[in-house]
Image (cartoon, rainbow, N blue to C red):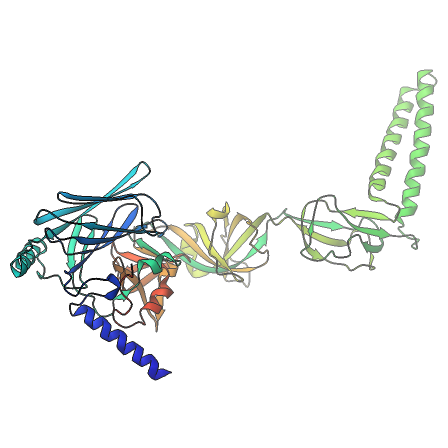
Length: 525
């Protein structure tokens, strides 16, 4: 099996060597005497254009293959028309032949230095990019010499453009790139479009100083409700499946306290007493009301009788609202989840015992424990990113509609940390009580180059990114990383403004880098 793999690899290398020696790749379906192929990569604000075309010669048809990618999503363009103009020759393609790919044939009529204009029409929007090219005269080696001389004058580079080289224009700047160098990775547009892949242009942005700390996700004071027993008795669950984590709604019956077999603090006895008191005070009030109208008793006696009746009524109704035919009923005072359940069914409870804790879990408190050596930065902390112990997701306080609540100004006894508190709204994925890693942001630094954490790879302590060289070629670049806020890394060395960095799909490029040479390069259209 190993020998068979080696044979395939050697065959791929041989095919790649043939392609670089001047014979075109079979995927392009060119004749053996086909002209030199040119590659151009152009960028507008919205799109990337990766263009492959045959070297331009007057009177001869040149095939154009234009790959158009949305920069924001890195998806292929699926609609719109593309116009290609070379001097006096022009062709309009009504739609891509396949997602992201336009094909055209153009016959140049004018030789010399020309401008190629690509115009993408999508709805009422027109996107325009252009590149420079040399149109040769069709008369053998003399024409080839003219083209080579013109290229040398225009770029200041080595004059000859070989098979596999790319004429690259980024914005309005163009340069001639050499043949694919060692270590350059080929990753086709079709592969990028079918996977989670993204390339971003980097530029300096404001970046905050970061203090790393550990901490915990807590409940906001007042978001927890503790429910106590109103009387002594045997506890019976209304819902046999009531457990920690169960969802309950406000007013939902949770427990019943049975006290029929108890002589002390029996709520049933108190219920009867309150009912008897109410009946007695009601009878007394009605009798005094009649006597007061007849002016037999004083107003003071009547008011006292009425007050006694009202108080007995309130006490009885309060007890009656909790009582049922089975016993004293206890309902959920708020909606939320069961945070703590302190008793099992059938246990004896006394008046005041805490039966259950209900947490609404809508607002949460974040506590970051900052080591004392970072105290000079504590006063500058304004926000934070954090990651919980059960997930790789990086949360942001602002995204959770949260804010800084308080900064500690002292250290507790036997403690070496300064607490910093944030309040956030739970999006349904935060677990109260979970431990978390915090990236506390303390003000803004000067603008620096940053890349997403997913763009950074590491091997044996060396960090690197993948840079886009042309539309379908990439290279690995060693970088020096600085601060991290959990989502982004500061790059102190290795990248510059305008570099295009692969931010998603890094593992795909690592896999592609294991393929030697140009094997598999080219498009089978």
